[in-house]
Length: 282
Image (cartoon, rainbow, N blue to C red; front, side, top):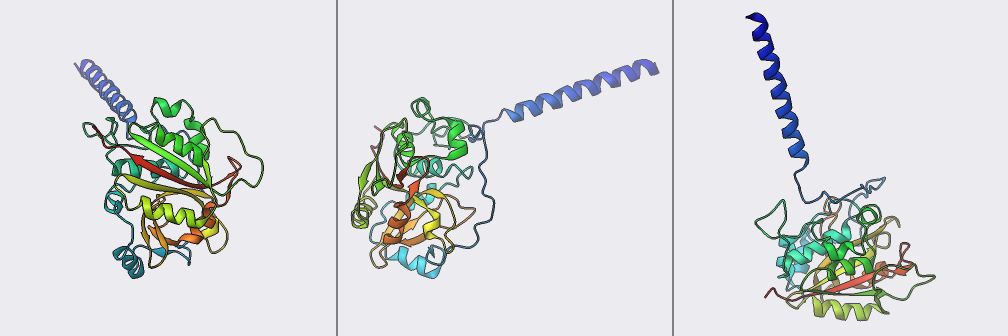
């Protein structure tokens, strides 16, 4: 009897182990909306506090600028959909889904949110997007201005148009996506921002150099959406998708133009901005 009892215990233990392994395997297969990431791009040092020339939205002055904003029609929707980039290379992706989820664009129905349609930083890479964008490259290097525009245009009901902040300073690197137009002055950008930020279903994404905005000339390229313009301060509200690093902040329009008029080494062209127009779902 003792031998039989021991054998039964061994069988029960084996079955319990197999069940645990099965549960672990099932857990590993759960789609949390970030499984498309194939590499982690990490900075080597902490960026430190918000640079001195920028005004935190959380500060009293930042709140006053928002309260008296000149163009901020879509601020509530953008704030409600404001997304943290899933890795340190996914700023362009996070910026894109922030404005898409804020808009009336048709949204994918996928895990982990179904039956609720919602853009994630993975399901935005639909068949059209993957035809010219390699996830391995995006995970390691992020997106250029033209690539982010292509990603947006791959979505139903979306029309995105990009503009470099000035012409290239040297040789241009070919990209397998349509190129952007060129704008040559901060005045043109300011006019576009005031117009776009005050219209329904219109959004503005910026691609800029953090180094230009910093106190010590450090930092790389970055994307974020804009949510408001203050005529009183001639400042724009940047909803920084690296939310673990900085809060949303106001920046002088001329200074932001200078930060966009910098060369992205992945394209050989200046950074810039993207105007996004969304047609409401029929």
